[in-house]
Length: 447
Image (cartoon, one colour):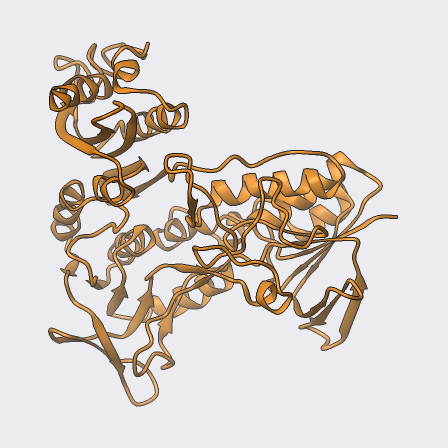
């Protein structure tokens, strides 16, 4: 019987395991996961802190027991993989409950080891009271500490940092957010991010930009964050400064690492070893706008990569084409989304890029509840190709971002977007959709 061993039981790992068993029911699939949870929604953690999700277990899609009984997958939670040997094709793990060592052979191996929360290399980084968020156990520990805290410091101004700022405010906490950049949301251009900053401050968050953290202070537990411009008293700190790929095993195994620092795979998710695949937040993929490698760790990408890997591990054939970098979040009462390239990214990639910013209604002007949406559209002046979109507003962001993602993936031009047959009815959109208006306006820049 052919055996597939999967290291990591989160999005990519369990998607691969489930797909592999669907393709080949006779396949022997073993999954090792160091956490007690598999197949969970880490993106739902901020809503647990807000109280919208009452129990942490509700963020689990399927339990390990479900996969064992219903899918026939040998899921071994609380197992830490300690060694992988390519020559003997064996995986060694430690059962964290019993301390017993387990060794299994594989025919095909999948590394779904995910990402690691980045930490700034500064004094005091290892003090108690400094947290990161990657697995559900992290969320459980942070929540138990957060309920006792008065002032919480957040280092980082990306999606998770800002979503957690909202969550802590709704818990009644004083929140200090520190960012080293000139604006929040580093994956946005500066101007489109301004409305988000206004909303954050309006909701009582003490936001400090252009400040670099240089140290954490405290005797045993953190009580102060020191930056290059000042210091802030805190009861605990959440680090949210990005994710780096977990490539520890890949390096030990001598697998090829890509230019982004993540594992290099082909479109079938196979590494430089034909019997080892990799998928999820530990691998790079192709940016469909530039055609070059990119590393953007997001859940939808990890799940799709996992399915592709599972198909191929089971003897089928599938390809993962790449991504355009689509993302969305809700921060207090504003929606923020992006896809493709920002203006700054487009210039760095060598495009003759132009952009326009518009503010438009989300519904017909006479229909109750009409809101404003801010859109930045980026296009190439030479080819008229749509390169990217950023949007913020109280409603309607998802529809515009998803539509733009399809437009960019298809390589469409502004002329195509301008004539796209988009739906119209007063409760949902104006007769001239914001995307159509943006495409019409940007064409003036081509002249």
